[in-house]
Length: 117
Image 1: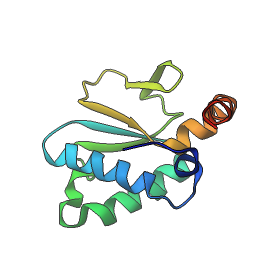
Image 2: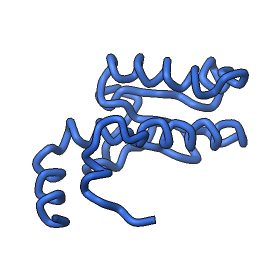
Image 3: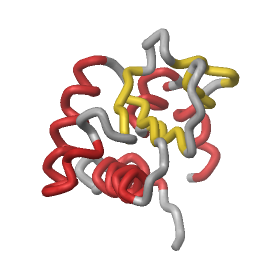
Image 4: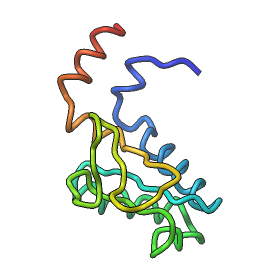
């Protein structure tokens, strides 16, 4: 699969849906998954989307092994830019929503997009 800047910057391209489906699949298989949202409003939006995507296995969100946490939460530590981990908890995967990175590091994203044009 190739990566293009148009695909990476286009709204409505399905990036979030694909990423959440990956998180749901990992959780269904028993993995402890943290999905990092940009803020609390995005957490609520992503939780609702994940419930729709999970369908009959929405239990993975309700006290299950998929948790959607806002980036500013005390439950998370950012060791390096974009590298989050959950405090005091072992996880199999920490997935960061693209909007979280775009919101926190717009200058880095902008420079990267210029470099790949």
